[in-house]
Image (tube, rainbow, N blue to C red; front, side, top):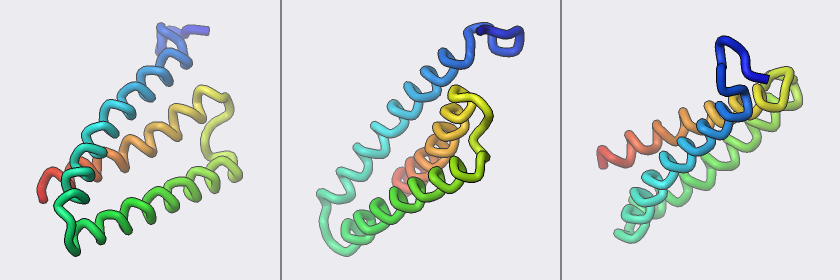
Length: 99
Protein backbone atom coordinates (compact mmCIF):
# COMPACT_ATOMS: atom_id res chain seq x y z
CA UNK A 1 0.00 0.00 0.00
CA UNK A 2 1.46 3.40 -0.95
CA UNK A 3 2.39 5.72 1.89
CA UNK A 4 3.05 9.42 2.09
CA UNK A 5 6.81 8.77 2.23
CA UNK A 6 6.67 6.38 -0.74
CA UNK A 7 3.61 7.37 -2.82
CA UNK A 8 4.16 4.70 -5.47
CA UNK A 9 4.48 1.84 -2.99
CA UNK A 10 7.34 -0.39 -1.90
CA UNK A 11 7.06 -2.83 -4.80
CA UNK A 12 7.33 -0.06 -7.37
CA UNK A 13 10.40 1.28 -5.55
CA UNK A 14 11.96 -2.19 -5.60
CA UNK A 15 11.24 -2.48 -9.32
CA UNK A 16 12.97 0.83 -10.02
CA UNK A 17 15.97 -0.16 -7.91
CA UNK A 18 16.24 -3.47 -9.75
CA UNK A 19 15.98 -1.70 -13.11
CA UNK A 20 18.82 0.62 -12.10
CA UNK A 21 20.90 -2.35 -10.94
CA UNK A 22 20.43 -3.94 -14.35
CA UNK A 23 21.43 -0.74 -16.17
CA UNK A 24 24.50 -0.23 -14.00
CA UNK A 25 25.48 -3.88 -14.29
CA UNK A 26 25.41 -3.62 -18.09
CA UNK A 27 28.18 -1.05 -18.03
CA UNK A 28 30.29 -3.21 -15.70
CA UNK A 29 29.76 -6.21 -17.97
CA UNK A 30 30.93 -4.19 -20.98
CA UNK A 31 34.01 -2.89 -19.14
CA UNK A 32 34.90 -6.34 -17.85
CA UNK A 33 34.43 -7.87 -21.30
CA UNK A 34 36.91 -5.38 -22.75
CA UNK A 35 39.41 -6.13 -20.00
CA UNK A 36 39.03 -9.90 -20.38
CA UNK A 37 39.28 -9.67 -24.18
CA UNK A 38 42.62 -7.88 -23.83
CA UNK A 39 44.02 -10.98 -22.14
CA UNK A 40 47.16 -11.20 -20.09
CA UNK A 41 47.75 -11.05 -16.38
CA UNK A 42 45.27 -8.20 -15.86
CA UNK A 43 42.50 -10.25 -17.47
CA UNK A 44 43.31 -13.26 -15.33
CA UNK A 45 43.31 -11.17 -12.18
CA UNK A 46 39.99 -9.58 -13.18
CA UNK A 47 38.40 -12.99 -13.76
CA UNK A 48 39.54 -14.20 -10.35
CA UNK A 49 38.33 -11.00 -8.70
CA UNK A 50 34.96 -11.26 -10.44
CA UNK A 51 34.35 -14.79 -9.17
CA UNK A 52 35.54 -14.07 -5.63
CA UNK A 53 33.34 -10.94 -5.46
CA UNK A 54 30.28 -12.90 -6.53
CA UNK A 55 30.89 -15.61 -3.91
CA UNK A 56 31.49 -12.99 -1.20
CA UNK A 57 28.35 -11.03 -2.17
CA UNK A 58 26.17 -14.15 -2.14
CA UNK A 59 27.48 -15.33 1.23
CA UNK A 60 27.10 -11.84 2.71
CA UNK A 61 23.50 -11.62 1.52
CA UNK A 62 22.75 -15.10 2.89
CA UNK A 63 24.26 -14.14 6.25
CA UNK A 64 22.20 -10.95 6.42
CA UNK A 65 19.05 -12.87 5.57
CA UNK A 66 19.70 -15.51 8.23
CA UNK A 67 20.35 -12.84 10.87
CA UNK A 68 17.20 -10.92 9.96
CA UNK A 69 19.12 -7.84 8.87
CA UNK A 70 17.32 -7.33 5.56
CA UNK A 71 14.04 -5.99 6.88
CA UNK A 72 10.66 -7.12 8.11
CA UNK A 73 8.84 -7.20 4.76
CA UNK A 74 9.65 -8.70 1.40
CA UNK A 75 9.93 -5.35 -0.39
CA UNK A 76 12.16 -3.97 2.39
CA UNK A 77 14.44 -7.00 2.15
CA UNK A 78 14.58 -6.64 -1.62
CA UNK A 79 15.39 -2.94 -1.47
CA UNK A 80 18.18 -3.54 1.03
CA UNK A 81 19.64 -6.46 -0.95
CA UNK A 82 19.53 -4.54 -4.24
CA UNK A 83 21.09 -1.45 -2.60
CA UNK A 84 23.97 -3.62 -1.38
CA UNK A 85 24.56 -5.02 -4.86
CA UNK A 86 24.24 -1.58 -6.48
CA UNK A 87 26.92 -0.21 -4.16
CA UNK A 88 29.29 -3.00 -5.21
CA UNK A 89 28.46 -2.58 -8.91
CA UNK A 90 29.15 1.18 -8.73
CA UNK A 91 32.52 0.49 -7.07
CA UNK A 92 33.41 -1.91 -9.86
CA UNK A 93 32.34 0.58 -12.52
CA UNK A 94 34.56 3.28 -10.99
CA UNK A 95 37.51 0.89 -10.70
CA UNK A 96 37.17 -0.48 -14.23
CA UNK A 97 36.67 2.98 -15.74
CA UNK A 98 40.00 4.15 -14.37
CA UNK A 99 42.02 1.31 -15.88
